[in-house]
Length: 326
Ligand SMILES: [Zn+2]
Image (cartoon, rainbow, N blue to C red; front, side, top):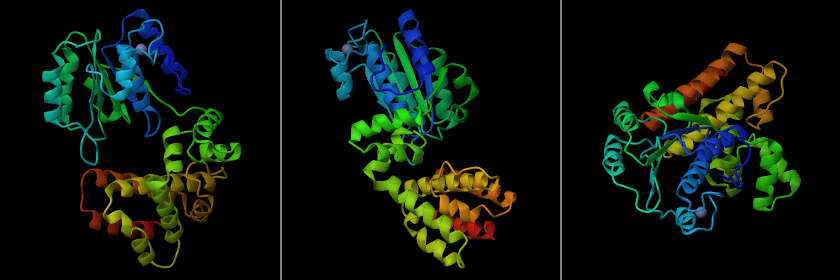
């Protein structure tokens, strides 16, 4: 099994190579890693390798199976994405997968299911999925993808081989994205440092859009926390009211700024949030308050996932930010 263009993660690649060459590929693999760490890319590469006709150099990238896999039209690779904000699989979707999984592969030796589990797959859906993993139909392989396996039932975890993805080294990430996007070396290195080598985040930063908007809102909120009025926080957070995904992203970025403030308070160097000035302004707060700020962002991320009323949520969040920064 080859992994063209898939950076770092040498242990994961070695495990997969070994499983593939031994002919005993696990019937269920769980890929976990932070957003942007390459779970989707690797899951698709594995699926392609499993259906590729060139068993010596799979995925060869040029056989009809690889070409169809790349085009997303291979009949034996089935992708299920969750729905809603948490992108979680529903009970109905798992039921449909179960019915479908008993059909024989059409072209390849196996059918491969890529299941993107999202952040809050209901226990009922997980139990249904568990049944399928406990008694898998013949010639079927499951690739489960989620941010962290801790979100899943222990019984599901124990039925899968868990592989954890990590960003490659900053150097590798800078070289790869720099070449791909035609960046100057210094620019690529700065971007890699900003995103801690997370390729997905680096590409998002380049394409601008939501990531950049969330970053800029988080920095503004962090700066306004130490300002005179709560009103400024409310004004800045207005775009979050109508955009749940943006709101979640802003909270993740804020959390990184708070973590940096914690690190700076103890004489370390800011690493995560790349908002050194704002983190620096917060780092004089007492340790307990700084920790409560990171807890606060965690708490509100969960609230967003649970579909709470956004107006109420953003308003109370701003009030508590101000309170915690006193
Ligand atoms: Zn091929």
